[in-house]
Image (cartoon, rainbow, N blue to C red; front, side, top):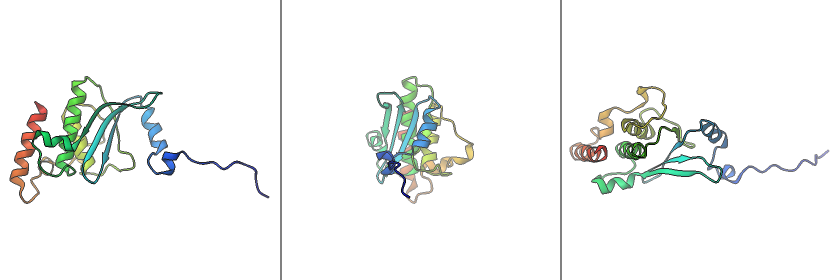
Length: 168
C-alpha cells in the first residue's frame, strides 16, 4: 500500500553538493565569523564572513593572485602562496580590529602539512586568532618558504620579500 506522504526535496545547494548544512550550522552556532577558504585550480581564495539574517556579510577578502602586486611571480596555488595569502588576510583582519574566527574549509579536509594548514599558519602568524589542534599539523618553515623546490633561491628570496611587505 502506497503512502500519501509528500516527497521531500533537499535544498538546492545541498543537491548541487555546494553546502554541507550540518557543518554550516555547527560553525554558525559559535557566533564567531567564519574564515572561509577555497582552493581552486589556479589560486587560493579566502574570506572572513559574518552571518546576518539578511545574508552573509564579507568582512575581509583575499585571493592569492593579489600577491602578484607585491612581487610574487610564481604559482598562486602552492603552499607558499597559501601561507602568504593567509598572512595577508590575517593582517587585514587585525587592521580592521576583528577579534577571531572559526575555520570553514567546506567539503575539504584539513590535511596535515597541506595547503590549508599553510594558509592557517599564515593567518595565525599575522596575529589573528583561529582555533586549531596542535602545531604538528603545520608544514615546516623551509617547506613554506619553498626551499624544497629545484630553483629554490629565487622563490625563497621572493617569498621573504613579499612576507616583509605584508608584515610592514
